Length: 102
Image (cartoon, rainbow, N blue to C red; front, top):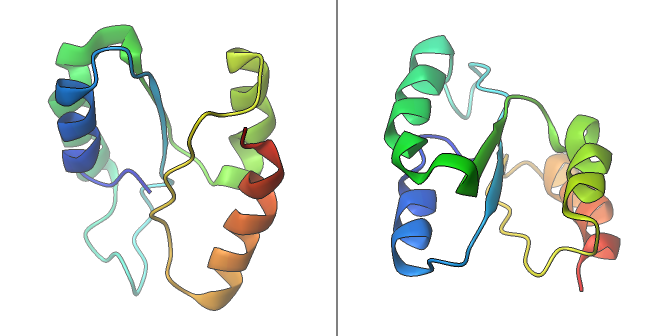
């Protein structure tokens, strides 16, 4: 997921035409024990200077992919997936996002 937003900040600073939909459920897990409300709030603050160029979706990809695709109105130019590294999760992300890229 977008986690703390460091990569998003870097990309937004260096690519002024870029718009990002960041997805992360911010749920604590074995992989991400620090995830939660505090991390989500901190990420919102960190990304707030970029205004409408960044949209956070606090959810899993499978629950927001259709909404995101409808909002951009075309295939995604790029999908940067940095989610769970468990095999089933990676496979699901490839299945969800692969057909929706230009």
